[in-house]
Length: 83
Image (cartoon, rainbow, N blue to C red):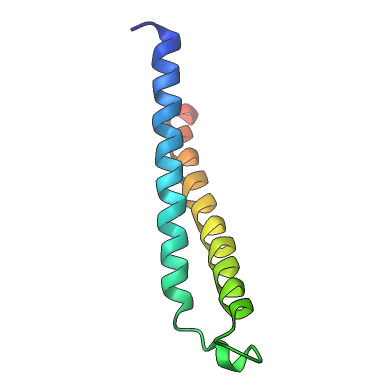
């Protein structure tokens, strides 16, 4: 396998890993947001708009957490270059 094929394979695996990390973090944020009492924050907690808001909050929070985790692992791999 030549260098270009190795790079494509590595980038593909990295992309797949990032997708999995983002999905896991979105799932964890959805699970954590279930403890939040939306009935005190919204007028109609059972409405479609309230559920969409909950989904959007979990996606936004999960993406930010995943971005941090992915960046942290990337920074960790850069550390050996310092020494």
